[in-house]
Image 1 (cartoon, rainbow, N blue to C red):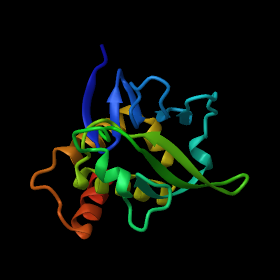
Image 2: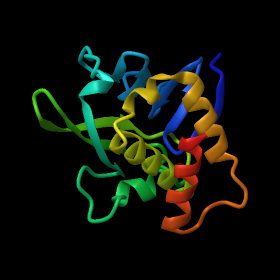
Image 3: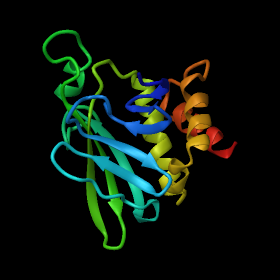
Length: 175
């Protein structure tokens, strides 16, 4: 039995580990935030830890397609609806790594439930602001991440504009 606490879009804590994507799907792809770095779990391969110090930028999180025109492709919309498409599709964290410099897509399988759009925007803002501040290692601190996700996910009233979302994340990161 796994223990799931608060979630923020595809980010959730399962059995004390912070993951992005559906970590319970057999043979699925998902990401794990560890103290030593980002660990990708993939269907048919052994992952290699990407140390937090290598992550230079996280530019965006997309759902349904690697490079949709917006942030979400058609599969992102269908994947949250009941029926045959439920839980189908992938998400991607778009990153720039250093030493050597490279663009990297970190794939994950979406959960079989709908992601709240505000939660997705808060998750993306948390990723981008924290890495842009050169503090990616904070994602490996389970206590810090738990506090940040709790605060953002339970915030009332919910931020509705891009400015309010950025402000909410800035305040959360400063606490």
